[in-house]
Amino acid sequence: MDTIIGADELSTRQVISDPYSAYRQLRAQSPFNYVDFPAGKIPGIETPLRAWALMKYGDVYGALRDHETFSSAGNPLVGKAFPPLVLILDDPPRHTRFRRLVNKAFTLRRIEALTPWISGVANELLDEAGRGETDIVRHYTIPLPIKVIARLMGIPGEDYETFKRWSDAFLSLVTMDNTERMRNIQEALEYFGKMAVARRAHGAEDLITALVEAEIEGEKLEEWEILGFCLLLLIAGNETTTNLIGNILNVLAARPELWQMLRENRGLVETVIEETLRFESPVQRLSRTATRDVEVSGVKIPKGDLVTVFFGSANRDPNEFPNPDEFRLDRDLRNHVAFGMGIHYCLGAPLARAEAKITLNALLDRFSAIKLGGAGGTRQALSSVVFGFDLLPLIFQR
Ligand code: HEM
Image 1 (tube, rainbow, N blue to C red):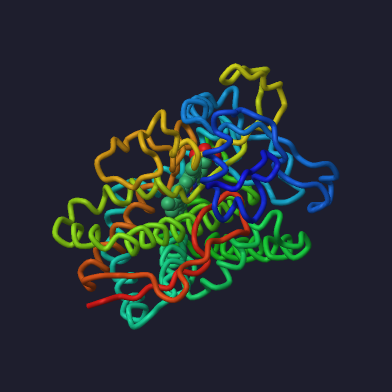
Image 2 (cartoon, rainbow, N blue to C red):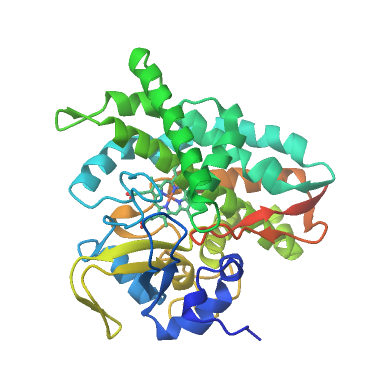
């Protein structure tokens, strides 16, 4: 039996750590208006921020495809809770220009070229992690994506604990003291600022050099655009991939027969990754602003109101995915929205998929079985945006 959950509880720790019961109860009533962000947590936000929850697959898909009506700009927390982020909080034409520029750094070909290096890092981490009972989050799923993004950007990967602190601070909008949060974000911006200065003086084969040298229609990028993009990559590229890999391993630890199937047929690895993206989406929700009065599923949403697209709920909508709460390998997964849809479709999707695939293949090569250790995993409850584990103890069998 699901505990009854009200619309205004959608940002509580309980729902953040287990949102699926809330979606089951509330999806049919959506769109509805709810408290997205409480008052008094952030200076300047003195009344609760309300938003319209879009939870049905069709509504989420429609909003993601209609970026003119559902703008990514104008988030009221920008400047109060976090600095401006390019790309993800931009609309065309600026979004189009910036996206064209950074697309080049994330093509499938470039990611494929990086695969042997990622594989090396993954195996090195597993040499240490795969002994006895291991918290796979601390020893593997956190460091791997941070080392990868650090390499792409051209910054030393050893600083990954500091990176994790910065990215946690950014995401802990409701749960961390705001002064502490802003101090961390400032520290990150100063760090990237120094990197940009160093790359201006001496270029290297990395993304920060590409950004400081780039020109869009004859103009160089401004300092805040470069730093805003570095910060975006730190947040968008790490926690999400950490959570995807943790969610996959949790699914597999609970299904020993699936592990055996995968060992016998590696062709299923990609399907397991896609079904986990649908089943336990690492990004659960993000905001938009209505640029005009608009009707969604018969509900009028006024111009200027905040709208939340619930990717996690859309991916469990029974009208799109029959028996959505079952993990299955025989679905049509082409239209899941775990990486978004439309112009903001995840820039790092090929990289995230590659990291998950390398991880699974490395583990399948090494171990005949995996199972949950200790008291099981602990879900994160800091950020309503992401879904994953703080702690996931696993036991590996050779
Ligand atoms: C499993 C891992 C990941 C998931 C589930 C994920 C999910 C998403 C989603 C849902 C969006 C759409 C945002 C929107 O519609 O407003 C997005 C955008 C984005 N993601 Fe990812 N992401 C992942 C990994 C990564 C990685 C590894 C990187 C970079 C290295 C990355 C960089 C970005 C960027 C830059 C955007 C903004 C794109 C734009 O606005 O044009 N993501 N991601």
